[in-house]
Length: 402
Image 1 (tube, rainbow, N blue to C red):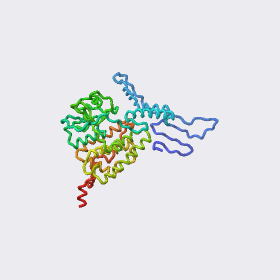
Image 2: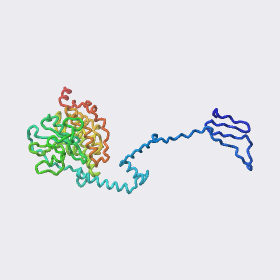
Image 3: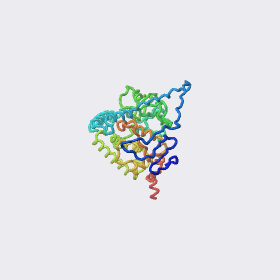
Image 4: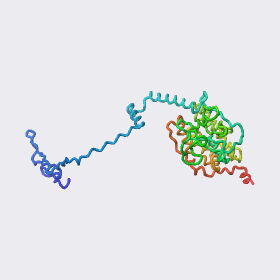
């Protein structure tokens, strides 16, 4: 009880409330009979009721009400959430809807895959043969050839590695295309981040907006697939594509694509088994040889490197090459880092561009366009850790044995 109220006692009580509340008085009388009931409580109005505030009629004191904020337009996700709540509340969608969406998506997926990755009747990926091949060895004038590449593509990456190792930067200029919204190769008006001649940017030789327009410049026109890498003969105005995939092309370079683009379980099983049998064999071979052909880095190593450097970034996840990661192959992983550390090679590797090119533009394989986190083994520090493969060179073995 607060200090403003007295205590109760005796046969009756008399309590007082704080002065700010209406006062209540109770008469000290016996309990009344039910036949003659009289009220024993009386409520008195507060003696000092608060005054009613005065309202000024001066027009200068009038203010217009603050305008209500305009409602923000509903996003597509909020509209979809409202629609689903209206249709079936918190429960799962009905079976008919799920089966309808599944059938529609499967049909659309097959149509898109037929354009992106043509297959044979069994569902196996059948890479279309290129219509252009290098006719034979030639020595063009400096600047007579122009190289077109896209950074996500492993075949284009081979061309960049050889161009760097052979010191052909001045002799063979390069234009770097970017994946477009429809998965075609296009050129940007402004250079991409990073600068340098390997940043995606303008077409530096004939100012066309995309690679299809470049292919269309050849004599007789062109209406087929427009791929990279492509060597453009500036003098003859024609296209020639070097075939650099004769050693390990079927089972590794193209093998990862046969896994990712398989359109039946049987086709996938056959491709993935062949891929990993080949990787097992290569890992065993590289346990006793620094490079594929001994002590010297050759074109065969370049062809293998550009697939290996993408393996854990892309192929293991997006293409379902999941039996092993590259880091689980001690010799192949060290071999990949050995080549990465060769001067000028690391500058050709743009891992962000590689991951963007696959995860954000291969819609049939990744409809949500969600790019996973970069594996920790592909940070610059991790890739430049000592690989120890110098001990496999014949000169090192001779010194050890002597």
